[in-house]
Image (cartoon, rainbow, N blue to C red; front, side):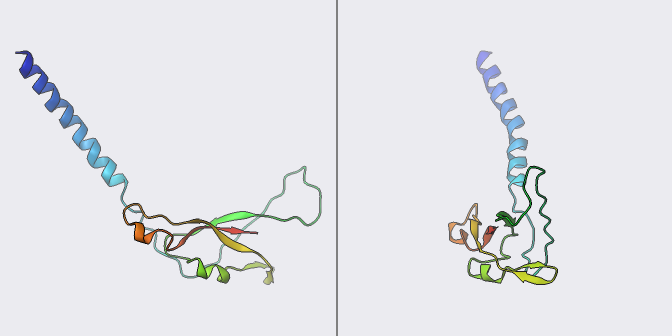
Length: 115
């Protein structure tokens, strides 16, 4: 009798865990955001109230969808203020990583640092 109870409990626990495992696999599906080849993104910088007036060096990260920008393509990122290009430094802050295929690691920029 005791053996049958243990076997029943194992089947019951296995049946309860099986749907959760399927849900976790479904949740790990790749995000379907398509690559963006060109775009314009408005950026607003708001100083805190304790910051003195005057020019400041500003650094921020700009995220990109997978496949949108390669490290070589960082030179194409521009900053415009009133339709006039502002000199900036752009580099890769974080590369895209692939969960299942290591050959795709670093193929595109995840976050660009703009300064």
